[in-house]
Image (cartoon, rainbow, N blue to C red):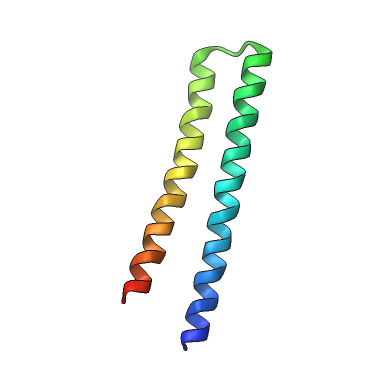
Length: 71
């Protein structure tokens, strides 16, 4: 049972790592492309909010893993 729980926790942890890395790459790319294309600040702020949501989701899932391991 512990092995199954550790396997599930590891799988979720890898998913979180991919989301963090992908969100970071998206944010860097969107900022760079937005500057190159001369997008308005509203559009660039939208990209920032999307990235913030991705990082927030990853933080929330990390907190849930931490809480589940406390039990």
